[in-house]
Image (cartoon, rainbow, N blue to C red; front, side, top):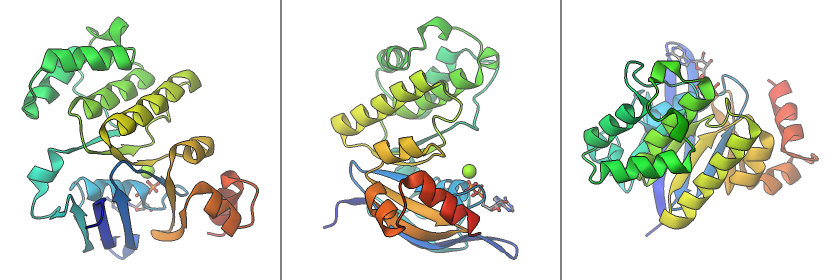
Length: 242
Ligand SMILES: Nc1ncnc2c1ncn2[C@@H]1O[C@H](COP(=O)(O)OP(=O)(O)O)[C@@H](O)[C@H]1O
Ligand SMILES: [Mg+2]
């Protein structure tokens, strides 16, 4: 049996005449961190939204834990979570209240302990009782990450998770994610425009361009294949070919 927790085959999404994701196939193994790289409009967010069942594929399939996402969405999503720089959470609640509601929605035990853990890990103590509408964008990003980790998911989908964070907090977040992967075998699919982050975090990288996979492998593999100095040069080369 393969150790793939995610199997994506020939996944395609069309919006009218426009093909945003064009027949992509990939696996994610248990404990693997897979980076999704590509210029704006390449189809990264659409791919993540299909993985979460928020956007229905035009064709192709997504399996997680061996189950078809379309048929077993509820069971799968119990073990999956998501965070994005571009999402927010209910504004009229405090940070702690938001986390508590997520805990109850997922039917978690031990909610106060889990919240204490997250507040400590993500350094949220000073604004734990602050109304969510008063958070800065970096604080909101940390709250959505806390929300995602609170449920102890087996797979985490992250859309530009560190985009609005200062370098110090971004670095802390990367350390936390690597530690979660080490401790629990968490698998992560994430997007980023930070090439150093891509190089240091990803076990493997998929490069998307106009909805298609144009390169796949370790950062070193991809850099070598395109005869460039580093991933940033590969990115510029591919993006400018558009
Ligand atoms: N709901 C939608 N309707 C029409 N076009 C969309 C929709 N969502 C995304 N697109 C288009 O699909 C392409 C891929 O978008 P997206 O997945 O957000 O790219 P990325 O995250 O890589 O920047 C873009 O050209 C975008 O305009
Ligand atoms: Mg995007």
